[in-house]
Image (cartoon, rainbow, N blue to C red; front, top):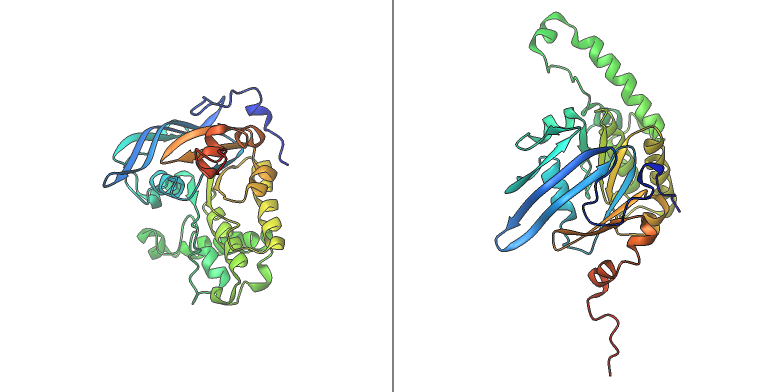
Length: 276
């Protein structure tokens, strides 16, 4: 089981509790679909350099929150800040360049490109991005540097032996690893993973968790949505639970797991009643 981060030690397990060094601060964020309040987060802070798990029953608003924060959906009210800078209204590609990168529940590899080409798609300065660079031929140096970094990322995730194979040949678990490698090509400060272990066999799940812990140990902030509570307890420094769009509990995994509001969210408010 993951030990609580020293930076979070002693914090009260309360929704919206301030953190000593938050990298991401969310305040008054709302996103509705008709009469359904998919996200209604009063206040949430993510501590820098930790692994934060976002849990909750299906339909709790977890992925919608990710979509809004990462620029793939638009808020109706509220604001959020990365390193103190406001992010409202900034499109997803610019947010990625600013240091906030997310993955998706369903991997989005480009099946007709090689594994190496898939990794290079997300490079910070892809070929042709600068007209001046293209005219002067400087893109060749950038392309070479990007390829070196992409091969390093593939080696990190044990995909280097498949660099020249088509991405469509990868298994589901390998596509998850490729998506993480591609996300790291942007050199993010905060990595948001949407159910990274879903549909992945136990061996690759352990590999994914190893990589996530290693990223945290190297100073990266990781936030991930997860339904497997064994995984949550093993890896999390801090856990945030959502239900009906709201943050109903947060704290160390062992505390959140015993929170009555969390138990009710998963099992129903009448789970303890005896049925005749």
